[in-house]
Image 1: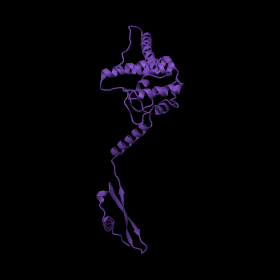
Image 2: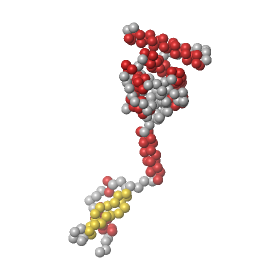
Image 3: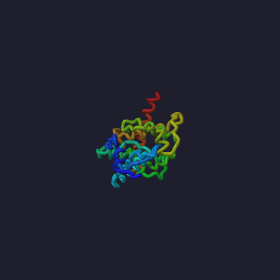
Image 4: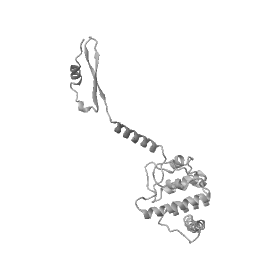
Length: 229
């Protein structure tokens, strides 16, 4: 039996609005019914994209997948205000040096990686945490609550501890000794650029010791007042 393709196309698309389909009609499926009559069985629709569109879509998908696989970081830095940003970077550098001095992070942790933890962009920062996970968890819990840290959907101390540092979160504050509690408060103090720094015309290490001693006294005084000592 000879088949008139044009007639089949007409029959297949009768009653259909092809504007509802995205793509090109590439053919008509023909079937034989139980009476041996050839009739249209449907139409084929094929989406056609340019090579440029395909590559762009692929890149977008890969970027999204990579981003979702990376841990969040803290949104601390204020870009667009160089004065504020410079002060913030100075404070983060002080925190980095203190954590090294106390042995809370491995000395192999690079300053540039530690700095990136405060950028707010998803990435793994390669910070090797050496102190116990309770200190880390409570430090991050307290940090996230600070007004200088911008809130993020889905951000929690637990997720940071597990995804960014590869540790098991523990928020039992009773496990903190007074020294660790004091040091956490000191770090929060330094990161708030509204708080003054106690600097001196000395070498970097000596200057850090002076700043730490001064803040330690302030923090200790505040803790004593809070606990009613």
